[in-house]
Image (cartoon, rainbow, N blue to C red):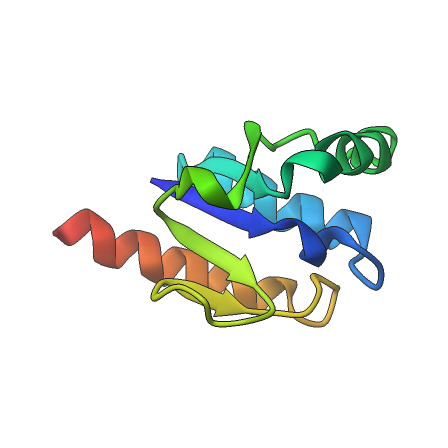
Length: 111
């Protein structure tokens, strides 16, 4: 199962540690592949921004929207059915996002 984080979420006001908590929990606790979705021409920019901050530590790959990867998404807009809406990942919403990941993982493991 994939967790797809739309790249716009990475931009400030997203905070580094809550972002790492959410992606790390998805990767380690829920055994999800964590993907960053970005346009092709922005991949290097996001990698260069995220890497020194430790935000890329739990990201498995950067994909483009054209690749149409399936999974649970974190996005500012509901463009896909399995989307958690968030404009950013901060200390204020990280626990909510992690609890939603937990519910989603529990639900999909029953199917």
